[in-house]
Image 1: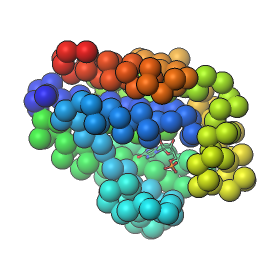
Image 2 (image 1 turned 180 degrees about the vertical axis):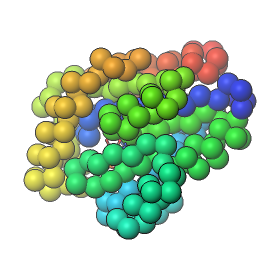
Image 3 (image 1 turned 120 degrees about the vertical axis):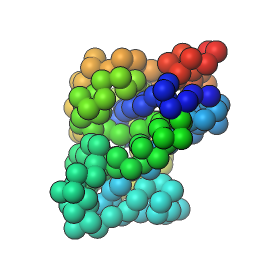
Image 4 (image 1 turned 60 degrees about the horizontal axis):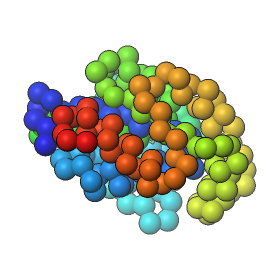
Length: 192
Ligand code: 5GP
């Protein structure tokens, strides 16, 4: 377990369809005391998503108001929607002495790197590009057009992987989960 002095911020980034969600779910199951920051977004909820659990779903006006009020640690546009990490989410976890995981895209990761140079930045990469298209299709949550847009963004995101402290290639899910767990445990001083 971490305390307020050692609680860390982990930024986990990677293109849409790379399996970040699954890897982070496993990470939270395996490392005690880690918390997941719930982002704000203007995107419409997908089937099964709950407000306050998966995202804080905001209207465009609400998002802009909170942005103007300086409520965001970082924010970015992605595939036509806004996403952002609320300072209050981070503070809530860190004040409890819990390390916190941000699952965000690359522009947000850059902003967190600037604001919190002590954050641990991890990029999850696919073994090759075709895997992303298959996964996004298989997920069945996005239209063909939305998938094409996400794949275009993925190209740009992959180009920035060198800016990250750690690169985890999600070829084999178990191996990638173990690698991610080991990075996080080492950073917070738990036995790997
Ligand atoms: P999705 O619409 O698939 O839930 O998320 C789209 C992208 O937005 C993903 O790459 C996800 O990591 C990113 N994202 C989610 N929340 C945030 C956030 O708070 N800030 C930023 N910058 N990106 C986010």
